[in-house]
Length: 514
Image (cartoon, rainbow, N blue to C red; front, side):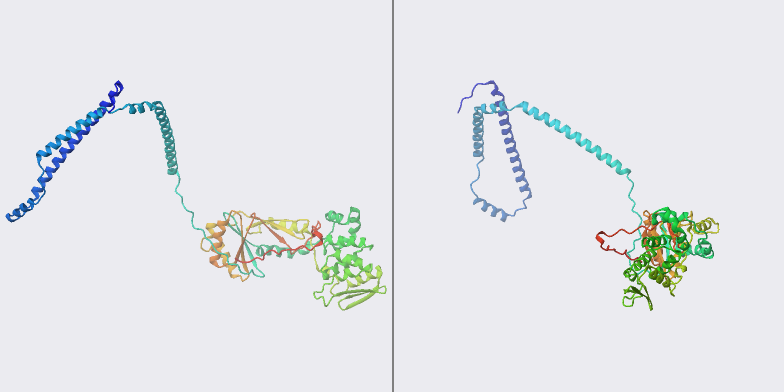
């Protein structure tokens, strides 16, 4: 065994080791005492719990004891205990000589500064984590406060929804328009609205015709077609007589075509062209071009104007042979010399054929200024009732006067009022339902779809045939097409198809009931 090295620093670990050994021995003694007490208590309990024994049972037990192994001698047990104490003391003496130099060396090698730095870093990490935790707890409290202030969600009331069921639109519908705004509905039946106006115009329609035809309103139109103011004023005496029955745009176009073809226009020739244009269903400039071509021996343009709907049975036929031209209109055939004078003579004669003569006079074109003046007086009349006010207006390119309608204040019904029993809206729905051709057209403003659903629900309950469409603004325009007026500007020309190909047009979808 190595000798113990004298060193003052070894004294402290050795004393601690001895204290530890003392504690171990004390614990062992206490354990032995407790074991002994537990054994005595267990024996006593066993003895107390033994049942009474009869002499016969006692004798039987004694015989069993005789065959048991040899009993433990208490004196031998005490000797063993003394030997154990001697061994313990010897072990303690040996422990005193244990070399603890290696342990001390390891203790010296431990870097206390590093441990301090680690400890400081852990404290900083702990403080940072604590700050973050406190911040998160504060945010949780803030969110709880906001949540407490948040109003409880209330679901919107149920919305009426219907599935569309398309079916055919009536051929001759009596349409009632229902303008739907956010506040309610405003109804409009064009036939009922226009009928009193048309009845009033019918009574004075003779006063709506041109009485004194002036050049000034048509100056810009005629000068644009004929090229100059001088040409327009020169043509005006021959053009003006047709103002009551043909559009000035077409009369001026025919005049220009005749001049370009070397033919001197006249009132009679322009009137004949007007009459011929009606049964051929062509405009006057197209007929004038065909006549000019015929005077030069080319009858193909004239033949192309055939109005027959059966190609096998043409109405117009013409052929050139031997310096003469044979013209046929139905069963009437006439042969003339192929000279401009004789060809023009044929067309003058053709205009006097039954079915052609004076047919253009059956048309009436009215003075738009007179119609506007009449309608302005009617609009300002206190006798003019209804839910709409109107203002007549004209556009230079339109052959009719328009009425710009504006809803009057208080003329409609709110969503709540139309739900009342026997409300005007419900009565109107019943009237539409009773009309075999009655149709309700809901015209809905972009922000009024909820109001439309309520109005449509009532209409569906009544059983009204209906459809709907969007309406950009709550204004209406009605065209008075019954009374044709003179256009003061030429109709915009159609754009020529690229490469001369016929453009493909797609017809808009037909309106259906839903």
